[in-house]
Amino acid sequence: MNTVKMKGLLSQNAIYIVLFVLIVGIAVYDPSFIAVNTLRDVLIQSSTRIIIALGMAFILITAGTDLSAGRIVGLSAVISASMLQVSDYPRRFFPDLPELNVIIPIALAVIIGLVCGMINGWVVAKLNVPPFIATLGTMVAVYGLNSLYFDMEPNVSQPIGGLRPDFTTIGSGFIGSGEFSIPYIVIIAIVVSVIVWVVFNKTKLGKNMYAIGGNIQAAKVSGINVSKNLIWIYAIAGALYGLAGVLEAARTGGATNNYGNMYELDAIAACVVGGVSTSGGIGTVPGVLVGVFIFTIINYGLTFIGVSPYWQLIIKGLIIVAAIAIDMRKYATKK
Image (cartoon, rainbow, N blue to C red; front, side, top):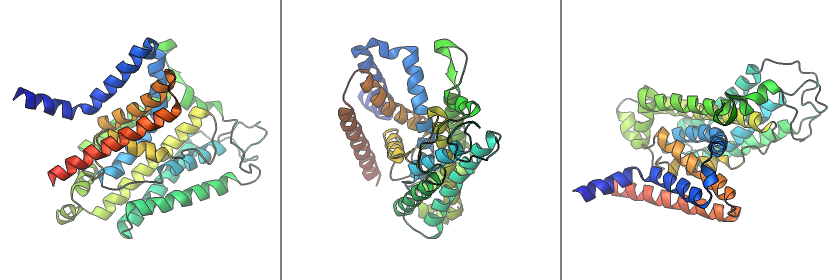
């Protein structure tokens, strides 16, 4: 009986054990990895990825997928950055644009992300297009739209720089001082995580989301308006991608139309490794956070100890395949 309990405990907490072993392994090789500054860097690098992955979790739990996430991130980054350059920058995107309140471009970028997500949801829910195809089309269209916007005169596809300090402070500023300061971007990621946890666990939308992913036909029979819920779920995910794009522009101090490229694959991988089922109906916020941290530590930690980026890709690929295989095995066992 104790053995059975132990196996169950290990199975339920496998993701946390993997994260712990990963940290310990790198720290044994190089003890300086567990310094406060390193932890701070990992948190900063994880912040926008967490927000994107949480948006992706909404979709995956409904048994869908979203290939447009990265391109929505890029569009939102370019939109916000193009409107928040200092007035004396020699290559302003909008030379005659007056200085706007920083909230206006940020809100606009998030709303654009929300609208893109709502379009995804409408195509999936109303036109019955499979999420993979629907979001693939949106991915291509959004990138084209972003590239057209980015190529407008006088910018003509030049990287957008010279961003205002009141905007870049959001991505690089912090509360406190020294090693124990807390970056604003980390605080934003924590707040978003708490809000998403509440939506997942304490709201009607969250309950409907799990019901749709668990069994869409049963959800319809029980009286859930599946179409309406799917549209809102995709819209919320799009808004989160939009927010992540804004934060990426603020963190890096610039933007191009290639921002966010392939971010959706990292988000899907983090969700799956964090226990979000590709078959739908299963997923938690803590699991998603740990999934993001695992991949950030793989990227940051292995670079920290001098492991080739190519080996990092191999390791990440193996982890993704193993996580999917375990997920599908669990799903087959339940059936």
